[in-house]
Picture 1: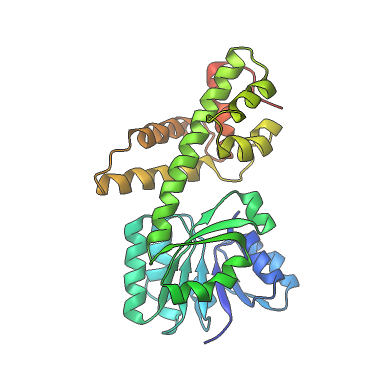
Picture 2 (picture 1 turned 180 degrees about the horizontal axis):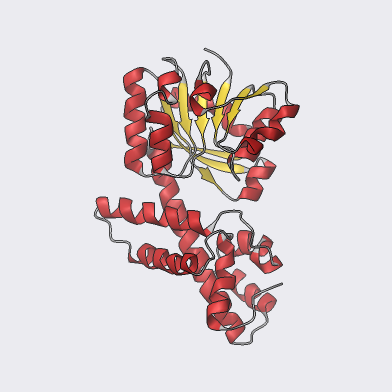
Length: 299
């Protein structure tokens, strides 16, 4: 089986992860719908820039996808003449996207029918972690296949968690993002109230971080992004809204009530309607402060 890897999707997360693989000597066929995203790979003689997703998969022992959502994964992987049609039996299809569990299950079933191994390994942590090669991956795969893809994931991240068989990674990611995004919104409301009360932000954060009220969004993302006046994405509010939609839809199908997720999604709908969709999701703090008519929270 070829040790060449197809890598499809060179966006804010995919490009730095593929670059980290290239720096560590992996041979890649790289593709993105925006040709300029492929340009940084010209410095690596092990990397080939190709003209389509199927071409990236052709002759590869593994094809990795990092795509915006379930519709894109379905079309790019399963469409006629797509990635799966160009992978050989015994090769691996590994999707790092955040998508609906039923789409993951559909791709896994189609791969199995063709004799291709399937792995779902959605990405945890922030874009800055992807840049530094410090991402977390929650992996759904058979044990033998997990062992085969682990060196690839270790080239892009520092924490590789085997969640179970195919489909378990996607499901773990939805749970993770429910907590991450809803806490991001609650932090935004808390920061607006902090400013409305006239409290010192640094002291208030000392209070929060000294109790069980603290959370990773406030410590990691807010501290390095919005509190520094940087709300360029990162992880766009549009994408956070998409993930909450996937979470609510999946929960409905499982008959699990999630009123907090639904409320947070509609809060993000309001931010998007006000033109904030392209900003980092930590920018929800600025949006809440703007709504309240108070000064933005800055350190």
